[in-house]
Length: 394
Ligand code: MRU
Image 1 (cartoon, rainbow, N blue to C red):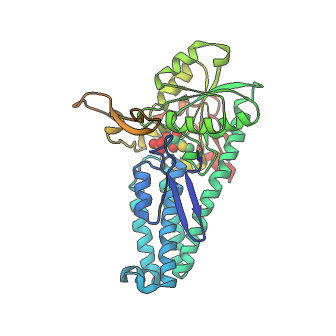
Image 2: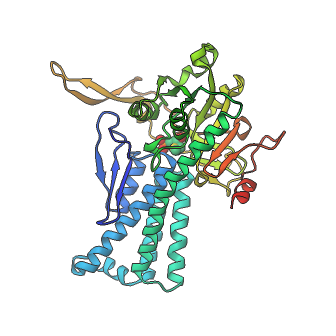
Image 3: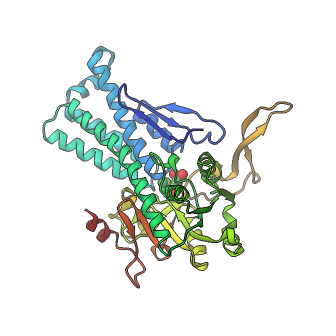
């Protein structure tokens, strides 16, 4: 079992991505050496989760640049003339970086982390060109930035865990149970996780009674990936279907008493409306009805102040095959061996709608936990003021 979705080494440059389509049954790392390969990894959801998507986009660009520059330094004759010219010209290098970022930005539309990463890398490139830096210096500055993103994300997740636990236990509870949705752990980030980071922190402090997690249809990030992480860390946990959350909250057994539903985010608008994995919105409605805290855990890199409210968030719609087929292990006849098989559930010819995310209105969210602290709504307000919060933290 490995919990590292992204394995990056600076020298010699290498990037390996854990293929999450094969988890939990097989642990296979795939090498990424070009922007196109990074794009494919994200598009096909071999790597997924908002922070991980942004980081892999940045790392695939810098790996591509580092490898090209290495060949340029050691064996320039091996390069085709376009790349050779580019390595001698900051302006041509800038064109390549702009085109690469535009391409990576096309991979998945909802998580803002990808676009933020692109903006940061582009700003550094254009400022390098303006300052007359050479191609080597421009590439090095991007490498430093991408590595910093990988490092900061892990640090931020640890802080989210700490702040989240302080907030959830602020009324003096000692041991609580929680529900989470999708996968927001090590596999979705550079490590530890956001919502799952809070659950890890609760467990590490001895405050977790039990973690329930939804299977998260259609792509099953819960039953395939969150289960994998929780089992790895031996955290007491139970898998439930997405349709069982209300029943769990109504069951009222002592060991089922749920204090909070904790989820991640792909994009949080300025007012706190939050796009996250499909099914999040209905969990927030259920939480409200049952008077249970509904917590969004997200690094500030997932907050998009350019977007006033959730209506402006683009929701990705994915292929119907994710809904009609399920992947699983089937035992081979007469052996102890298992094989991964894709099985069709509904009949041929059904119509399918497959939105990958939904938007939870700020009104239904109790608090947004970031690495900078916890944001709550002002008394009587239905929306958060995330601009004010972020400005007060700078
Ligand atoms: O489609 P996915 O698997 O990329 O969606 C992931 C989620 O919705 C997560 O909750 C979100 O990205 C936060 S991950 C820390």
